[in-house]
Structure formats: structure tokens, C-alpha cells
Length: 213
Image (cartoon, rainbow, N blue to C red; front, side):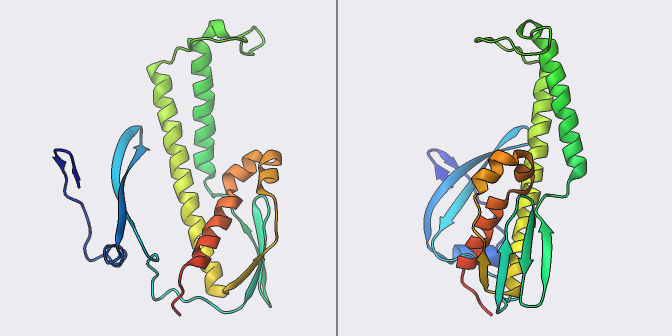
């Protein structure tokens, strides 16, 4: 990568079939992505290539019709002679308990550092105000952001595994129409843990990819 006077060599695993497939496709553009990992800003260079994504030759798509009944957390899936209920919520109970403890600690620190901004009953005073944030509170906010990032990455991985499992069972997937926005308004916390709309977007993207049986 060359950016002005800065020249960096790319760390690429040449024998990776996914990387080899990407490098064989035409490169459309290069973009720099900034991500916060464990409280530190990291920068990555991504190649945006034209064509279709890599698909493992061992991943065979099945033949048949699969019905999907989306819900807030549980999804009902059924084939011709089988049916199953899948919970989309990420099984990270310990991580969520850790997040709740950190959130309560952040709230206590915020109240201790800004006692003049609260009424005797605990409510926040109206009007503009300047908040004092201690270093310990910043550290806890960083820990909370890292825990949420790990949970999101794990949920994305599980959604991809479930989408691949469904495609191995059938290639004609019919989904009942539902309003995910209404789910979010009514069941905000449960929808945040399961992300049903994100799973449906992942499944739709996998269906549009080329299939090699």
C-alpha cells in the first residue's frame, strides 16, 4: 500500500484459497477501515474485488423447499418431513452478566463524578451540563465496548453457520413476511440479542452467491 510517502507491505497468506480467489479477481478499489479493538484504534486495508465470493467445493447445496417462520428470537424452519425451532440469541450468558456488571459500575461512577447533575430521587437534572468522566470510567466503557464487539462477532459467525446449514438442506427457501421494525419497537432487548433482520440479510446474500454442487 502506497499513501503519500508511506509504503507498507501487505500481510497476505498466499496459500489460502480464499485469498488466492480474491487476488485472481479484478480489484475495484482499496479502502482503509478503522476499528476499535480493546480500546485501541486499529487500521486495516481492504481490497474490494469484482466478481463472486469464494465458495468451498465441499459445500454442496441441497435440493428442496424449506419454510422459515421468523420470530423475535426463535425461528421455525421446516422441510418436507422435518421441522425444528432455532434460537438466534447468542449463547453468551456469562458475557451478558459481565456487561450488566460493567454497566452498573459505569452508572455508579458517573453519579459519583457528577453528583450536582442529579436530583435527590436519582433523576438527571434538565438542561445542558458538562459531564466529568474519570479515567476508571473510561476504562470500564472500553471494557464494555470490547465485550459488545466480541458478542457481535460471535453472533455473526453463528448466523453464517446456520445459513450454511439451511442451504445444505435445500435451495428453495420461503420466508414468512414479518416487520422487524415492529419487533424492535416491542421487543428491543431480545431483538438486539438475536438480530433476526441481520440473519435474514445473511441468508439472502448466501442465496445470491453461485452454487457449485
